[in-house]
Length: 369
Image (tube, rainbow, N blue to C red):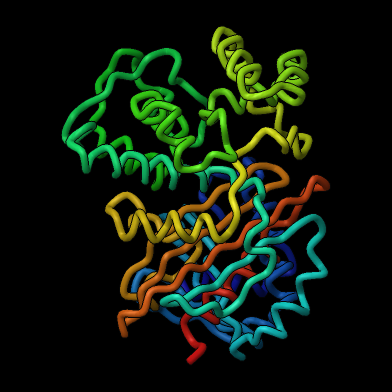
């Protein structure tokens, strides 16, 4: 593995032959090439590669980059996942403020630890957060389970109205199949399964979610969001934009009979970013603290190296023009920190700079005394 990773970063170009035949020609090599070139430009030359539990640590002149990687028998990458960068020099608040003007659009950030505010930038500004809204669905489920409703071991049936677009896997399950509520919740967070989410929203009722987030009334399920963004439904989108709550509920009823769009709708960049779930960084932090380290939120640590924390809860979200990462972190001293970042930009965005920004915020939470 060290030799393969060293070759990847020292070669004149990233070649298809570096990867297993199954993913050659998929565009994955081009994506990795972009990440590699950006990493070298930002952090200098690769010094070496070392192993650390589940990750390989790439030592650059100015940073350490944890990577999850696997090779096939012929030495081709089958998996390559870059985690949050660790700068060699701990970042300061001033360092973070200095890079923020490079982001177009609007950025909202919050770092809070045991009630102490460590960093904030527009933390009360509601922004589109993509699938991070699913933290509210999980919280509503916890509230109802506390009253004895929708127990984890009970099952819910998949109806045609629940079937949404990926991410996830439940959209491929047979209509009418039964699924444990605990599994639906875990897939909603770990896999960001949209169909599992819509099953749960239907079972919970929109009113339960609107009580948690009145701003997002009427509360959208993922299928409705995809349909509203479909150019074929421009008539309903226009009604949604000018309608009051009652009119918008009527739009949702009309959308239910329309087909889902192809995923290619999103290939050209941001689409109707006013059709989203809008939450502030402070509201997401409150949702994370309310959910706590529930089983559903501790299975996927995002791009963060979990070995540096005692416990990690995470949910993120993205679509073209929108990206969010939200962490609840517990260190070995028992301190808990919320680290939340959201970026909206109608002109589109490059993900890596945002991931580096989140890395700075996570390190502030861990290292500031």
